[in-house]
Structures are given as C-alpha cells and as structure tokens.
Amino acid sequence: MTAIDNAFEFTGRQDGPLRPRALAPGDLVVVSAPSGPLEDDAAALLARGVAELREWGFRVHRTPATSGGRRRWWAAGSPAEQAAEFNGLLRDPEVRAIVAHTGGQAAVGYLDLLDMDAVRADPKPFLGCSDLSLVHLALFGRTGLVGIHGDMATYGLGGSWQSAATAARRAELAGVYGRLLSAAEPLGPLPASASWECWRAGRASGPLIGGLLGRLVALQATPFALPAERFDGALLFWEEVDRPLSALWHDLHVLRLAGVLDRIAGMVVGVPHQVAAAGCGTDVPALREVVLDVVGDRDLPVLGQVEFGHAGPNLPLPLGVRATVDATARTLSLDEAAVRRP
Image 1 (tube, rainbow, N blue to C red):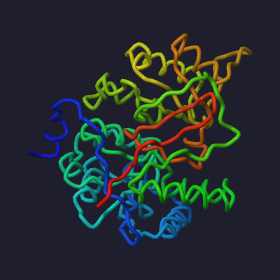
Image 2 (cartoon, rainbow, N blue to C red):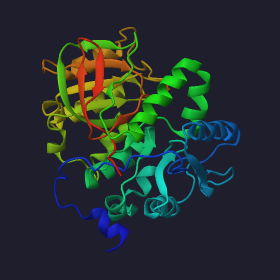
Image 3 (cartoon, rainbow, N blue to C red):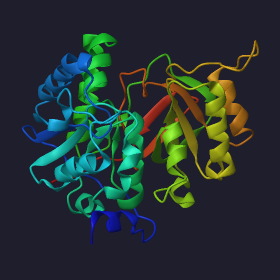
C-alpha cells in the first residue's frame, strides 16, 4: 500500500488516543520544516530555539529543509519534498520527537502523502501550531495520535520565549513541556494567569480537540474531516491570527451549522493576535461577545484568553487527551498523560 492509498483508507473511528513513547534524556529530537521556509532574518531565532530544546536534555538535529535559502514559493519545498522529509522522520526509529520550526501556508499540500502506517507503528510526539493544526488534526483523525499543539522552534522557543517571557516564566514553561513529554502521568492543572477570563461559567471534562480555527474549518471540507462523533463530549480549543472578527464569527457559525457546538462539552479560546475589527463601523464587539453570540444559549463553559496561539509563548495542549475546564474557577487541567511508558 502506498502512502497515498494509506492516507485515504479510513475504517472508522479510532478508539482512544495513540500515545507516543515518553521521551528520555538524550533522545533525538529533530527540528523540521513541514510548512514555511527559514526566512533570512530568522536564523538566529532558530538557533536559540534549538539551544532551548538542548537545555531540556535532548539531542537536537535540524533537517536540511530548515537551512536558509531552501524554499519553494511560500513553502520549504514542494508537497512531495515536504512529505518525504516528514515521512522519513516518522520512519526513523532513532527520531523520538519532531518539532516544527515554523508554521505557514503549506501543510494542506501533502496531507494525502503522509504515512499513517508509520505513525501507527512508531508514534512519536509532533510539536507545532498554526498551519500545523492541519497535520495534527489529520494524524489524530486517522490514527488517534496525540499531537502537541505548542510552540515551534523559530518564532516560539527562539522568539517569544526569549522576548516576551521572564526567566521564571521560561523555566515554568520548560518544566511543563518537559513533564508533558517525559512523564507518563497526568500533568494536572496548567499554570493559570490573571489574564484568563470566564466567558461562560461552568465546568466540563473531555478530550481536547482544536487548533487554528480557520484551519480546523478548512480541514472539514476535505477527506480528512473529523467525523462528527469525534466532537462528542470534547473540549474545543482554538485561536486565530491576522483575520477580522467577522471571519471568526463566520467560522464559528460554520461549526454551529455542522453540529459541532451541539456535541462539544466546553470551549477554550486562546489569546487572539492581530484580530481586527474591520467592517464593524463604530459598533465594535469584543471577541467574547462574538463567541457568545454564536454559542447562544448552549450550556457550554467557555474559558477565554488562555495562553496559546500566535501571541506566544504557548501552553502545550495535547490533542485527544482528556482535560477539565472550569471556566468559573478559570482553570484548565490535563487529566491523562500525553505519553506512555516505554
């Protein structure tokens, strides 16, 4: 069976998450380019991101596609080249985790080339966000893989971690990521901050599903769409960047019309970044108003302004892992491990 045939073979619901093996000190973590290229002015950021991963105790390699000058249009390579790099990492038993160096606009081009059998045979953590939400959701939908929606190497670990976080916050986040990737036990409460907002009171538990809102909606128009029942009892988390409020309202209504909002148990909204109020005139709503306008009278706890998304740094959110949101108390806890014991 070819990778393409495998990608389109869907035999029904994947019961339970597919947890990668827990990482150990000295394991090989590879920084790859599954979407955008390395921009000329970002080499130093990537180097700092690699250094941060090494401080976590891992060996770190970079793929050739993360080199400066390696690009095709808006991507680090053609879809076939990017799939070949990613599949090679999935198939290499020495590689124990994959970290995207950045997001971009390219992941949709190779979803049908991903080697799902390699994921099932040797599941390993994949860290990324933004455009890589497509990869997370496709792998989760087809294999149940617990992907980590979290900071990437260049603009996350090498960027916002260094420019927007204190030394104490970096140490706290490194501890959270380290325990999530290396401890086969529930992480428990994520470190909350005063910025978290209760947009609708309540408490709910369920598996985490989500990512970049526009990418989630786009994926649902492809053969990789998550079946409706995968949203049953889930906690939908999402963030958005560089789009008008009207576009977010539109996408949330798409999810409403698809029945998603009637299936989920709760919602967690990240910190918006460069979300504009274009077209609103003088009647400019807050994001909270936009969300609750679509949610309507559904009995869903909604926790807003949680630290994940393009504003960075990100708290890691593992897809498929059961979590509890208490919007009233403004807490979010991971109730299951993201990785398994070797």
